Image (cartoon, rainbow, N blue to C red; front, side, top):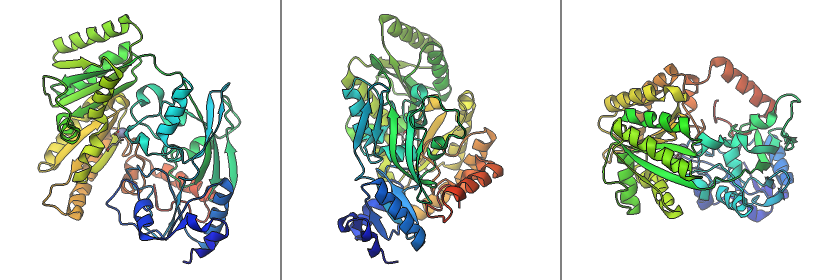
Length: 459
Ligand code: 2HG
Ligand code: ZN
């Protein structure tokens, strides 16, 4: 395929075909998938995106949308002679509507830039996660991003008030137009959120902000038994509107400590840790937290704990949780991102523990996650004596066992990272044949030529 004709509507220097650009833009954080793009393009306007879609339809070339490339399921990977459409040059914050407390953005705005923009206005963009410094809003929306504050603020789905999209037919639509109430039929905006670029491109979005918490305070607890994690959750959830409730294991903590040079956060070292964030608005709040801490200690659910006294301390405690992905990346982790409904988490954790111990006796496993949302991240680290292929093959065998369990719990094979390429073979454990058939039919309507990120989610 000759991509030279792309320059009829996109300037020469925004069409790249060199090896270095392919290496950078051809994939996301899912490093083990071989890439094979034919070009990387950088549109600057919705008009250029429309021309690109029309060109792709005529030339029967597939397009892969690409944001900050922090995805973990291969959804932004070009492995089959596609053109990668990077939105990094569509990165303007266009307009802040003070009355509605909504901001209009282009898809390439970095998540952290939007968070800081909200902060400058005395407001909060509440979607937050470790890759905030590189991930982009378009990608966040296309994957319905979650993160560490979902327990309080929900997924990004809740904060997108309006979307401009270009469908796989090259048609532009303004979806929902920031109406709070709009009972005029199907909400196509929500259909595009989380569609992983399989229906069309997001070219603009309006996002709502909210009031920030007054005094976010972090608590870290040392938990001796797995069973204690959700008992602590239940006790806190009954009393607080939690801002976050996360867990990680000592294995995860040790990787972070080695990576960052941080010391032990607590005197006691235990197999599990819980990190909680509350809005410490008055003496009563912290007293209530201390009461729960003491009763949890009496019950043996935790053996040690600390409370952040400053923003710096909060940040240091959060690093123990947020730096896990980076601290383990050299071990080529095989990633699972699973969920069950919250009330099933205790039983689910015990069951996963058994599977991992019996099936991965020789592999190091690192668990952590947004356990207050029922979402567990399981990272299996590659032993040095195995090749990547051998390692992934063994992980796939265990996936079958793990996902059977997930299915029996009515859970999901992908809680927040998306399906992309890596979870595609397992979609049927979460979605019924009828659901998958309807999803394919929906795609065929928006993308009749199958040019929009084909092969992602399903074939
Ligand atoms: C997180 O919660 C991210 O830190 C990454 O979703 C999870 O690396 C992972 O498995
Ligand atoms: Zn996560």
